[in-house]
Length: 125
Image (cartoon, rainbow, N blue to C red):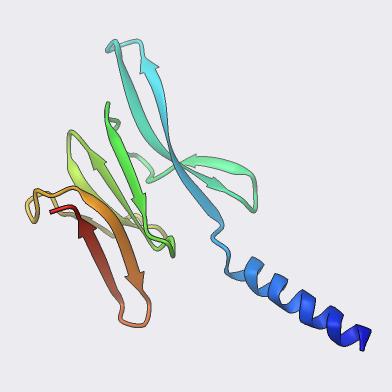
């Protein structure tokens, strides 16, 4: 009986840890002395290795950035005042979509459905 209870308690913990997202995405602001302005960049923190890296690699710095990630962490939208909206595939950053001309509305939320293989984008307008 105690073994069954222990197994029933450990299985959900294993499932939660195996399906948990391994990354946290955040923006960092810093002051650029050569241009005399404050710039921002997106970084990704890997929870399994405790390592922080620039994400997406070789990104263009901007003085205003807004990162939006879908709950499955499959896609990341980066809005900058220089380039507009760009959606990146988090597993392969060479796959990206610039959606500047498609909509003037600001993206509020994204949801990715693996079953349908579709990315749903929500905005205020």
